[in-house]
Image (cartoon, rainbow, N blue to C red; front, top):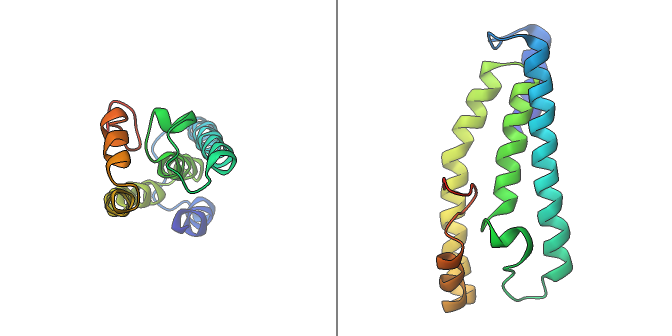
Length: 134
């Protein structure tokens, strides 16, 4: 949310501009933003179609446990590049540990809610938001 609020201002006033070709940065930001939006809708559509109180493990969930956070991360960096500002990129980077804390906290609740089923799911799908990384 902070990126959406501050990003346009930094772009308008040229605050802390990224030292790269502006057009390249804007196009990169748009592509990354659209990728994040795609991930979000894959999660949203699948989750709402299948969630009926039970643990959802199919669709995008077979690759990552928290696709919603993945989409937020990707969209955040896409917007940060789109607004062509080191300040907005710094905000996106600062958001990462906050997201990790939220994920770890959410997983405690999911273990309480789903018990052994969620623990098995965690073993089957070891990646929280980025396959092969975290």
